Image 1 (cartoon, rainbow, N blue to C red):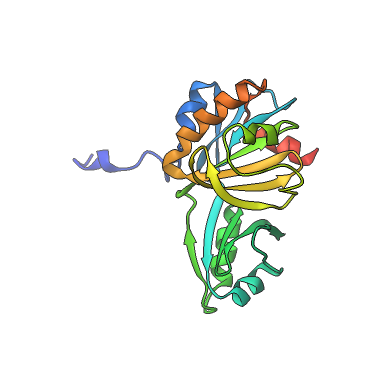
Image 2: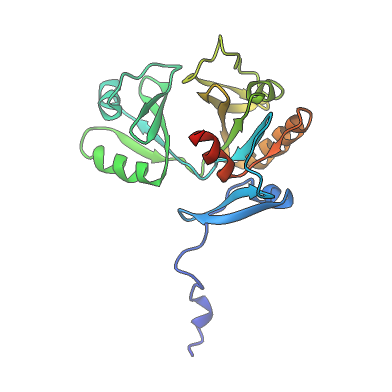
Amino acid sequence: MSALDFLTPVSDAALARTPMERLAHAAGARFEERDGWNVAVSYGGDTEVREVGFADCSQMVKLELHGERQALTGLAGAELELGLAVRSGDAGWCPVTPSRVLVLGEQSVARELRAAVSGDGVTVVDVTCGLAAMALIGPGARELLARFCAVDARPSAAPVGAFRPGSVARTPGYVLCEGEQRLLVLVGWALGEYLYVVVSDAAAHLGGGPVGADALEVRQLA
């Protein structure tokens, strides 16, 4: 046995952790390893959301693409319009400025994009650990958002696909309307725990609480 054996890692790779993990654990979350992340998959095994729920999605891949609008449009395979996210393949493309797009998706998205941008003048910056993300789901999702966010998420102002920058819990962030009853909120990574506290307090007044990744999957398939 070498004197340096204590430096040998116990496993091939350490699990990545979101800034909301500590509070999710305290709330009774059950965790599983998914794509290298320690993910809260359920709270007490209940996957049904009656009125409103919220879930940590910080492990999702988030990439910022910088380049000419024409090059970005070509990569997306769809017209990119400010204020409106488009779905292309397995990713959501969210234009922030004409030359800057936030791309959201699974681990495969990062690999595919890095291969696709080779030599076309587009820069890819991985901001996965720069932005914390939380999904709000259920009939009361928009009401929940209104209790801590200045972004107008009424259906008339934010239809499905709307992507809005603005003040989220008094901090800069983004809101993406993924569905009639599903919103995605993004803020700076260091404020992830703060966001969890704010949303948890607001949800409690609406009879809601945290849900895990399994609940998100069930609702997406419904």
